Image (cartoon, rainbow, N blue to C red; front, side):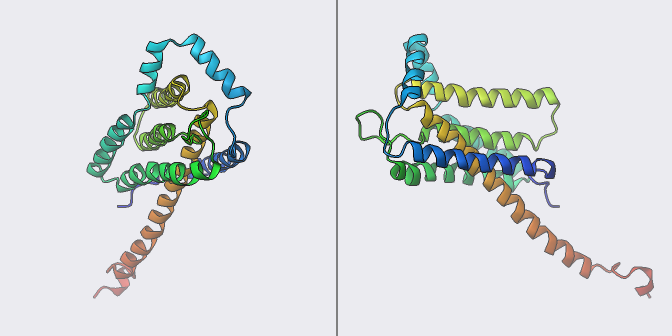
Length: 229
């Protein structure tokens, strides 16, 4: 039995729109911050966070962006998906964040060349935030495969959104990234993970059609009662 698509037909067009806008935002930010550093918006956000969030908040929020959290959640999701017969969700959980991080670290950071302050560290987009956001989007897609009441689904969305936002705040308050670095990371994560989900759905649909047609041809009831002795 072929599992239902991760992105249903009713959500396909909105998801494609989100993917398109996310890619456009990443491209625009990459051009704006090409070999650039801080700007007024980044500086103002950083000052406000430093003024209102003390050292204890800085440490607590920064912990939310630790890769071990995202890896643990994705690992549990892969196990649960395989046990439930949803190999497509397991593939998304492995491939989606991996490609998003690969593009972040190996393509965009060297290409854009945005440095953090006067250091040699490349900052756009944020690798830590890409890990958090890509994991959160995978978990969101996976949660949509479950039969849940509206309030429970809304709670999942709220928790995942809060995790992504607070992790970004922790990175900016911790003086590790500019605010716009985290925005680019979220946009890239949404674009990559949702694109891979659509590709996986498309591939699964393409494999299902030949199998169904083959079963129809080989079925003894293909021609109905007239072919029976």
